Amino acid sequence: MTTRPIRIGAGAGFSGDRIEPATALLEHAGLDYLAFECLAERTIGLAQAARQLDPDGGYDPLLEARMRAALPLASRGDVRLISNMGAANPLAAARATTRIARELGLSGYRTAAVVGDDVLDLIMARPYPLIDREGTSCDLGSAVVSANAYMGVGGIVDALALGADCVLTGRVCDPALFLAPLVHAFGWSLDDWDRLGQGTMVGHLLECAGQLCGGYFADPGVKDVPDLARLGFPFAEVDQDGGATFAKLEGAGGLLTEATCKEQLLYEILDPAAYLQADVVADFTGARIAPLGPDRVRVEGARGRPCPGSLKVSICYEDGFSGEGQISYAGPGAAERGRLALDIVRERLRMDGTDTSAMQFDLIGVDSVDRRSDDSSTAPREVRVRVAGRSATLGGAERIGAEVEALYTNGPMGGGGVTRSARKVLAVASTLIERQLVRPQVIMEVA
Image (cartoon, rainbow, N blue to C red):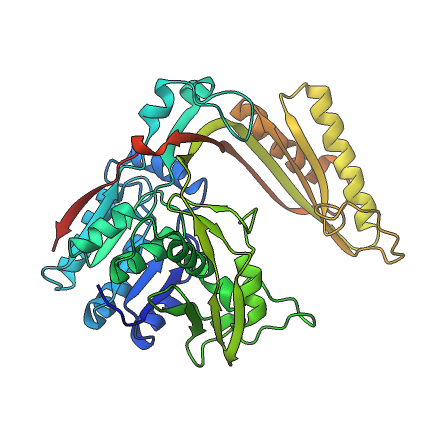
């Protein structure tokens, strides 16, 4: 336990994020901890499918590249790493990390796997009501691929207490990756609700990495962000009460301002007075955000209330197939030829009786996103036709792209650049499970 400020950095904001900003933080930010947030809603279902093909797989595909880049720097600087890159197989991820540590000569490097979030057997044993659609968990039947509960800080804190240099989890609440090291370092009680609310706010601001430094923020001429090609990731210096100063490395691209902090604070939280987490119900309505200088912002004032009695569970299940086809038209009359192409495909699919639903017929750049009428007198010089839809069968999904491809010689003049695809759809449903049924466990691997 310490009373000095703790410095924690954001190493990733999603599975495919850039690696270089994380290594820059390890080299130059003087960190105590670096957390990589890499697990989206469907990612764990895809990882579970990968694990079914390979029992030693199912973890983040960039884990090995990240660890080869990060482990030497983290070990040299005594920085502890935390990540949900374990995805559907934290133990295999820990073993892969340990193998890499041995190859790098890091004898004694300790990697902990936190398991226990996989609750598939529990939610299929009895009907848990779904909270985002009608029905129960049992109604999804054999289509279910995975079910994972959003755990809190408990397993990570236990792993750090056991001396882990690196902690790899499956599904945990995103801010918990950053809250856990604060609980461990400062010795916060798990019913110190206001400190947990403050730590959750720190985690929420850091969890999307580059977004706090101007990524997903830039709007040229409205919100200009310098040097986005070299966007840096943020870090926070957090004091014992949970107040934090956020910054980025000097010379890194992007910017960290009161505005970037406010946008990230409100990102994906639904109710800022009641941000439901496994560890606390955080209240951000009293947050105070104050610039301290270039790329330095002080944030404090969050509070917390007792944690919910249940945990959210994400259920990934197979939900048929999606098919898509695209083709481009350019030059005079491009939009008119594109609309004719859409009419042709629409009618051919109807004539064939193809098993499709939720069909969408778009001219990308004209009406694929903004469907308001366009009164502009300037006709587009190029358009991209897109036809997409769902089917209960792979054959039905493939038929959509096939009819678009047939436009080459059976449609308007001048079409080109066809692409087509068909894939299985992995959908997500949610339910709630009693928190006492979910118990994290820590398994340590040593290089």
